[in-house]
Length: 316
Image 1 (tube, rainbow, N blue to C red):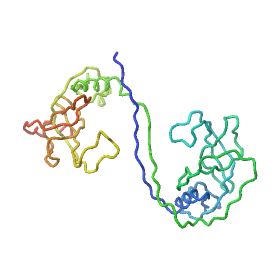
Image 2 (cartoon, helix red, strand yellow):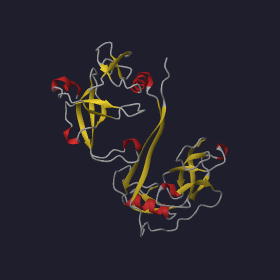
Image 3 (cartoon, helix red, strand yellow):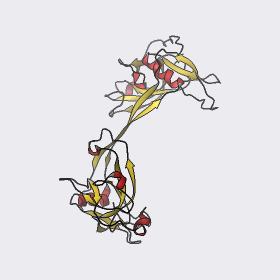
Image 4 (tube, rainbow, N blue to C red):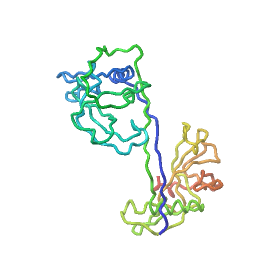
């Protein structure tokens, strides 16, 4: 059996969020080494604060300062920290109910080992040296044997409040395409497109999935398709891809669904060799390979007459 491919894959994008008055005050306070909660109509203090009462859904905005000391309510040991986590050495994830709060805040506890952590232990905030108005302004919690700290009496108003944050959402994982798509990728390296035929409905799927999505039966019969195909639908891209070297393409450009000859499923690819405003449904195209490329760089017009709509309408 041929080796199944696998490779590390990273999905990442920056998420920009504007802040309302409650979250703005909370993050501005962290920047200034002040922890603020919000008081509900029934007198509870919520930390971290929310903008709406979780019980009544009423808007709440009465800010109240709490202490930077508190009690661990529950915990879990992290023996192998990952990229972007608060500490580089093993630590405990803890829920800490700060003095003056009625709810718990999730963060890291710097401790020498799991034997040093227990529910009910007292802890205090360790502030980050450089603070910017983010939850990371709390570097972590640390064990505390002293008296509870006292709030400073902050009013919750700031001359230079934090009004927005940018959070980088990132997912790291190892992707394996499986048997069917491994064969498809290996064929692409030979400038061939290979799909698989369903033994029941006889449809040919490209890229292959290893099973027919309609009949639910396994597929194994390989079928070579293309190289030519027909544009079924397309879109014009007007936003330039950022921080992606292999998509450094001048806009506008066209991405299309392309039904390769002999296939019963359209794949997508970029259309080149023609002005973007001349791309159309039914356009006949062929793949263009770059030297050493493992997949087509783009598809270009073949010069053939456009395909009749009836020939590809089922593939839209």
